[in-house]
Image (cartoon, helix red, strand yellow):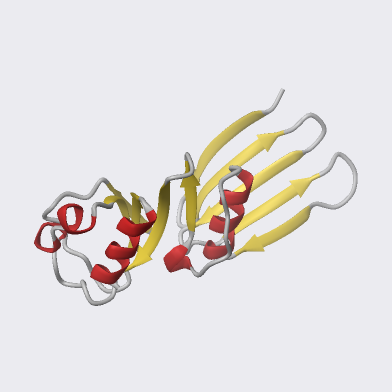
Length: 154
């Protein structure tokens, strides 16, 4: 039976260890967004892979069985039930304004479910959340709603 253990790595990030039937898989999430995968077979040398944040997100979508179309970070998305998509949209022209000032929900129909800023993620940001240049909005909506959101904030 597989088991998963989580631990903090101060100054580095988080570590997840998966004990498989005959091997160990360790995932290290670095604070800078990199991911390291370490596969340790019962015999032989460990195999270490280092993934960028963008590649790790794409791989996560594939592993989750979500619809996947190669795209830049700004447009990485997964389809939920064939109609609603999750998409990552980078802030550009909307920097300095709050979500309330932008009236995102009413103007686009999309819902901002989190904002990634550097190495932190702010879940469920309120109307008073002020966007900064380079913030990545994680949003849910239909294709047309997400298109309007991209036009509004990029």
